[in-house]
Image (cartoon, rainbow, N blue to C red; front, side, top):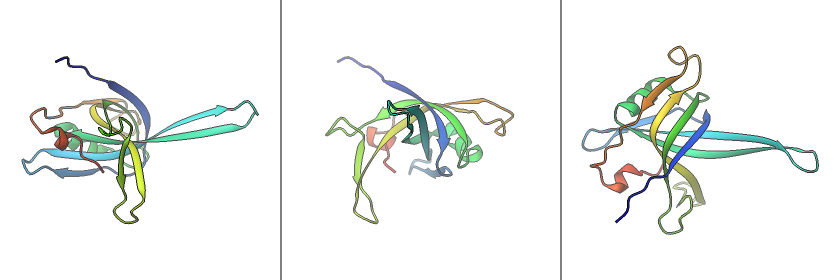
Length: 144
């Protein structure tokens, strides 16, 4: 059996404050969302603003540091493993708990998080990930 890895790199801003919790085994997990913006001019000369949202999950010491220093609006670079819906091969899909509305999102399990705001620790800070490979696959890909 061959093994491969797909690494994605995104740069954007947090859409909300991080949320940290612990697994039953005591492993810290922090989740946050990042908006990646792209602006361009179409053929008609109109400026178009695209926003793509990513749900980020970080583990271990990285989770603790992200929870401590990141806030809504913080600029970050995230390198991570892309999560996907195993049934469709596309973004994860679920039904909203409150409205029942179908939703989908791109998800990354953070391998490394870099703080890009100058207000965070005096500049760019790298926080390497340490996703626990001993956790079951479902535990590493927790939906929001």
